[in-house]
Length: 177
Image 1 (spheres, rainbow, N blue to C red):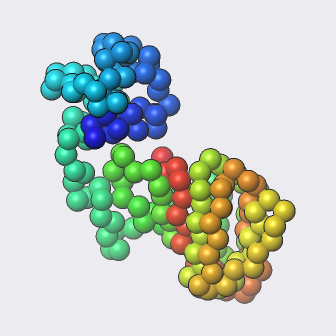
Image 2: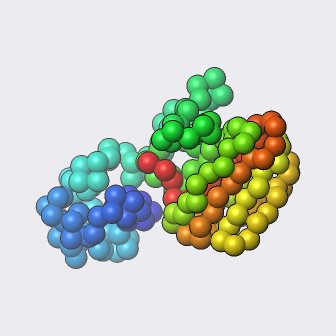
């Protein structure tokens, strides 16, 4: 389990085993064995790995504190994406090991997003209103209770042609930074 957590954190940071070895002072073969759970690092080695991956040692052996895994309604985290008029509220926790993101989005009337694409999957669930969605060349009209789940490497966009805001739950991978 420690090995998988190390590998996931390293990959999330875009580091190779060689990069991690260079920063931590440990060898590539040793780190490879640790990531495959074929070797157990000492506390000193684990501290070197943690420092190189910019996390505390407890990241690999403990659970995140409640403040990182519970998002309270009275303390929303609003995200601002460029000049977009869409309101984004992060529903996900803030722990470093998360691999997905969940957002509550309010799309104002008349808003049309630009064409986007990114790695990973996207899941949209319309809570209220009607939302037009294009994935590749396909067009879908989603009403309250409808959802779409797709690979986001395909170009996609959305538009609210209605007169009221559309409320959407978006869940996707990878997590936003």
